[in-house]
Image (tube, rainbow over all chains, first blue to last red; front, side):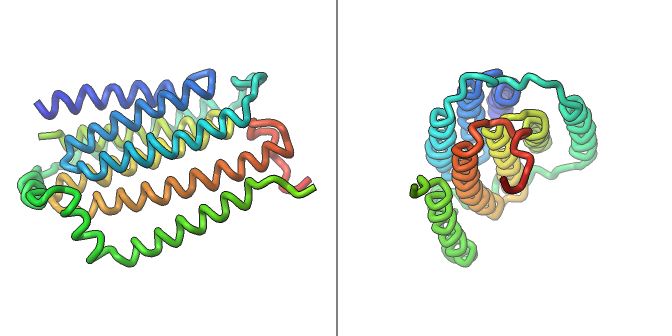
Length: 168
Length: 100
């Protein structure tokens, strides 16, 4: 049952990500990226990561995409929404991407995974996934947590400073 | 029981799709969206291994990746908006000199 749901969500994710990179208009790409991110969030729920699924909806589909859409509407470019010239880079990118993908499939197929983590994770999630993640995050990973908060402050100040109006 | 190799294969596919999008498109916003797609594929790989091994380290790493990705998306879009004010184009081919 879980693997059947997983394959449905995986095909939704792959198809929508293909539309993201192939769509002619930018707004269509952004909307299909929302579909991709939401299907990934559902996959996280299947993988016993409910806190991360909620964070994915809140942060990615709720904040990052809205930021991208703001930028798209500020830009509001009518002409040249699809690239006119042909570059050598495009088929080269497809070729190299296909080769790397085949190599990755080869290695994933060769590895034997012992699927023994499900019992351990359900045991950890007995107190709820959020509380289990919080116990680890605030005890073992407290230093990266504080550093990430400083990083977010720095990026916020930097983004506001870079994008401000110039004084005439 | 989610198939671990199937989930890793999905992560690999999404990563390569994002990489191809970042290399072959000429619009700066689409390149940023492809980079977000790549970061999401990495998150999926982390969570899959956390599911396979049985502890929560992968999920915590995915939380940090998500935070850094949000910070980087905001700064990238700020740079892009500041650049667009001067050059009036969203095409990365025309942003080819370092200072004008």
